[in-house]
Length: 497
Image (cartoon, rainbow, N blue to C red; front, side, top):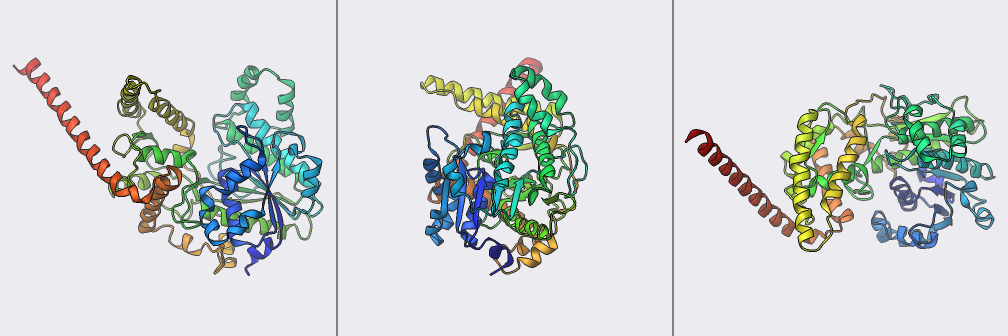
């Protein structure tokens, strides 16, 4: 038994945000690689589904496919706790609080990750929810460690981000007080630009405040902060290339593969700091152990912060990765049945070129397709997707044009050494992270996972999808040649004859 799985042996664990990308991946890894006693998952009622019904749905999630094959009984260790991070005491009843009395490890993953979330909602969930989670943890007599999952971008005004606490430009107490004192959402939204100076969105602002809150508790509770960068597909675990969600970067990749997203506005040398899902989760599990050890002789002087960053071990720029996928024709090798046009994307740092391509390659095709849908009595579908993808890229713009420096993953040498030959081993992932061949393989696996795990397309349909894609590509070439012919004819008869 390794150090990390030994740390979780027989533990009762409480997870907030267990239905999110990080939460699900964490739960899956703990159940598959550790002999935990129980994992309690805070779940709120949603879309007329109770907490128990949502837990049943969670157990059927694609991320648990390997777990269900290898250790099907482990999913029975999941217990739903009805509640909501936006409510006092997390909305947990006294009966369920008694059930949680033996919890020794808390992972606070709950947060709204929308960049354009209204300030009121972002404050209530990301700051208020963290406060309620801390208050709940104070009642746990067996608590060994409280892990707050933050983000590498919680201090976006810095050029270099170190694994340490940075004081917040605002008092989290004042910001929470504003929620009670300012009832008018319009007034609060009007204050957003003034409150969030130095922050590109409400997400990074509220995650920064939450770290300040955690810092105030670090002498009262054993707490640590974990800052992963942009969470991407898994390299190896639970499956090579596993794509976790259609949210964020995975959603944009899916739109490129579907031929809907045709252009991206990005600086050509930008190094998007990424954290492959399995690498981030394995590190998170280790950091919880390391944080607990750091508190063994009392509270440390400063808040303990751990980071997961690719800056030192992945040399590829985002543009290099994306263009490789086009050049090597990975989109054809993993062709989607659900595609509109031939996949592929143009990347530019010229705003005028970007706007022109958005209009000609995204808006016009979307309007034409929606017009046809209306003719056949169906509601328009493509224009809302085109609009949403454009808005998503607009709010991501600060990260598409800024390079953030960092010392890489915290204590990486120790992480690699202590987990060698265990279920949490990361040696190969870091050793070959710079490899061009590893990059291509990872991207191909990601595309195959998107079509299978996110779009629900069977691997048996891949040959048919490839044939359909080839036909669409030939039609696309024919249409372009026809339009070129008509343009030449018009020029000939208008100006040369």
